[in-house]
Length: 387
Ligand SMILES: Cc1cc2nc3c(=O)[nH]c(=O)nc-3n(C[C@H](O)[C@H](O)[C@H](O)COP(=O)(O)OP(=O)(O)OC[C@H]3O[C@@H](n4cnc5c(N)ncnc54)[C@H](O)[C@@H]3O)c2cc1C
Image (cartoon, rainbow, N blue to C red; front, side):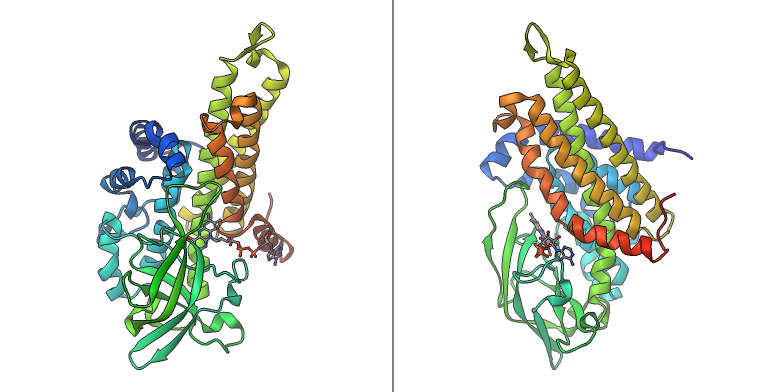
């Protein structure tokens, strides 16, 4: 068993660390507080080819392995988790278009998506349905050579930058089971009737916009149907979400690592009762627990990613990694805040932002409770293993 990264992966990690130190850390605190969109950082990520992480090389992408993808999301999230969101749902949808798109869809979108001159996201959640995707109400009815979409989506990250935006719809609302009537349509920005109606105010995850959308009789050509066949939409997005979970787990590892680094640094500087607080056993135990859990979360994430790279099914592993790493991130962020005492509660210290960013990883791309049910199903059906 080899726990080491390849030379290429180490180089990628070092390059990312330099990028984060030069371009993200110096501005993260101020821009996050101001709600400023990090255009310059997005441009830097485009220059590095990061918008093409999941795009095949023949379309100009990096076709990165999943371990490399995890490295990218971990390192960026150490600097500012919100920035990782800009390439998060983008990468997921690029993967989905590359995997399921028609030749025409791939040729039309992937080269520009890889370059970052086009961006994307994913529109699944609705005001009345998130975990229960088969309960969505957005409908696309066939009208000659077009589909006409009506519905509402909410919590859609990157919505103001995305074109095309893959939208999960019901092409046959009467189908039973419901997923047999679900499809993904690629909707371009500016299509009449498609409107981003508001930006949702968020606890954290500032940087990328997260929005509510209205689709009012949006007419798209039949060629916008992902893969060219109806009834495959739920399966397409669920497969894409599997890769998304490695991304979320890696973001959580990045947040946990930064929380630990900040706590260790602060404990080595702050004095109380005539000594550095790192000399108190209570603080040492906190640091040790953070380090143990953080490293466990990282290994689980790389394990899930390595399974995907080996071409093996990894829904169980990526689900386990996402659940565990997100809860470790939340715990580490709070512990780091405690180590900082009152300063940890101040907007002037990084740990306050980490504390606000961490919970998203528990909620997004399948809540941890939903994923626990998925893991339990795999275990009780005999498909999963724990050894
Ligand atoms: C900042 C942010 C960004 C987001 N970005 C996107 C995006 O880009 N695209 C997108 O489509 N969505 C996005 N989402 C939405 C996100 O994926 C959903 O919020 C998430 O899937 C949960 O859905 P919900 O909010 O409708 O909660 P619900 O599904 O209503 O769940 C509410 C609670 O009930 C529990 N629950 C529900 N069903 C079950 C069950 N069967 N068993 C046990 N417990 C259950 C859940 O675990 C949760 O605790 C984003 C959300 C946030 C907060």
